[in-house]
Image (cartoon, rainbow, N blue to C red; front, side, top):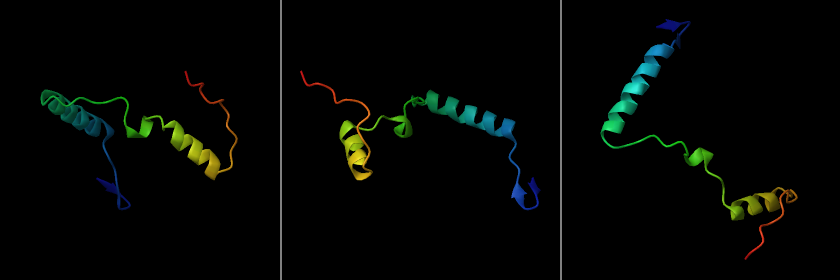
Length: 66
């Protein structure tokens, strides 16, 4: 369905199709992760580099090495 050449997505149908796809993947042994690349914490080196590049002060003191 389109309105003024813009496609209209049926949210319920899209949700059901995604649920079906997830169930099929689970049947194959592929599970959904709750921690993906977008939610992963950057390494301490990456944070320090970004702070140096953008001239930002360190907000949290560095961890003490044992």
